[in-house]
Image 1 (tube, rainbow, N blue to C red):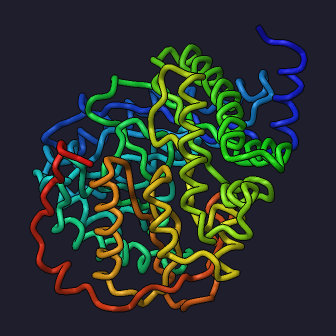
Image 2: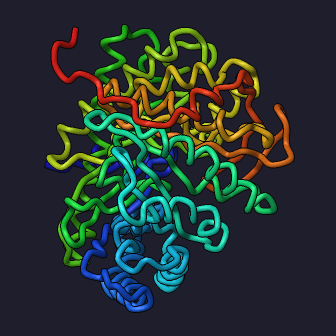
Length: 451
């Protein structure tokens, strides 16, 4: 039963604590658009996306207006384009241009799915699409790309890892005059989820319905404010407060997701209850960790604090919705989190500490700015490390690294908006070239006899 206190509390969360629905993402299957003729396939793709998602933006604005709940992004994800383009054998970039044209027509913020799933090897069309990513991302405005290079069941495709180091570097180089934005729209995954509503890694998995609505909520500011009310509680008290707050946040996400699905006449998929930060003051995951008792994010104890946060968010959210999915936990993107940016600038947060934190967070090394002269094999090695953490721990990990072309450690790169800004971070420059050049596949880990 809803009472006046609950309503007022929600209004306060929205007005003063940056509570919002980060994204409504419509997932659309393109399997029925496949054709041996690339032009025909692209025409079908454009027609289906603009027809099925034609009312997405309007419905999002209507819900926002009626319920007073900010909905920051309206997005679309589609079937991995490597699967669609394989039949035509043509240039995959024409598919990216079609997706971008559809996104402009719809008025959405991003469209994800220029993707390939190569955790066990390259199928027809996969390598061709991956090699086209730099051109596709530099030629489009709204298209996002992702590549899944490993999984707990398949192991890690090291040939794909080696290739992705070059692709990330080239994506930055091709968009050097636009703050290397190409690399910011590209994610390399291990254990990529099929129902993730968040960009840049969203794609519509082959096991998903023909069309579905997935919602991503947010609310780091709400969690931090709740913890401020309990300055002297023990760790159990901290976990309980986060759980109760995550429950309230997720209920709001469930409401919006069901209402959007009803109005668009498509199935409701999942609520991704990840705490997604922004550069705005008061909307930081790092500041939550500091509210727990750390002087700076990155201090010893940060990984433990993040583990508490991630687990409590999931426990609270799962009680609020029977359909939780995507990534669900706490994001730690450096440039998108005001507290993370402060910690890097202060020298308390390093890439080594961030790597440790990825063992217990939602995803991985996200939105890290690295020197523009970083060799591709070093980028590949960072990806291999992250994929290994994901594979062994049966969790999603990923990297979104931005080589800042022409910039060195300590200099700044500013994207503006939700992508934020931040300093170029120092990397270990010892060469992993021979290891990366071996290729092959890291075998999947043992799934039983764990201790």
